Length: 304
Image 1 (cartoon, rainbow, N blue to C red):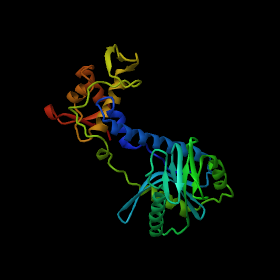
Image 2 (image 1 turned 45 degrees about the vertical axis):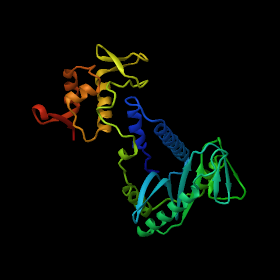
Image 3 (image 1 turned 90 degrees about the vertical axis):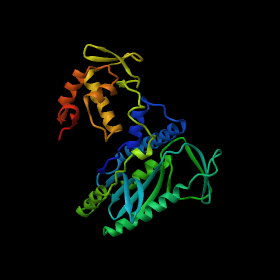
């Protein structure tokens, strides 16, 4: 049973909304492509765990803190008298492990992912102890990319390779014991301790003025070029989208990118590239948001 679902990283959402509207430096693009790839790998792991017995409690994508130190948990499985801690890696290609040193042919200085797992395990153990929970923790580093191979000289039971994933799942499903209320309370408590970080410090600097204005096409990401009756039309791919739906979608992007900026008819008219009339913008905003203030100070807020 999944107690805490994994959410798409907000910095990745912001990056995707920014990309059609501004030029992003190549190093920033590489960074966000890596984040996207990692997230896709985590989602693949979540799908694999849908085969887990429903007696266990699963929490995905937790960010927790103990004594001022934050730590990320990809997946936590609460079983009877045991906690499984899974750190998911979507590595691709050939890797080499000699003693504690990880490397590839092109990179001889890779951070040891086992160090991260050990740190996470230590902090989680201390946090659980503080919560009155002393069951043992079994940590695993799981690799779910079939194109990954690790050359290793000694057996490490902490490492779960792509070819071992199904066997590992069968092991977890062996002799399941129904959990009592104590375990559910722990799962809910951990979910409540999840920290939501502001993503804005982790994305490229941007402003309303420098963003390209226009209604972003829902299909190809280009800007809509014309209005055809009650639809916006994309000159790049020919896609058509209802005006109301397109405007609301682009307003949501505006709110995400500029959380401190007021929602006004004038700004949304400009944000959508002046392609939709102010009268239509006002109608759409009035239908979907609550109007506050009068005259020049009038703006819209989300309905409660």
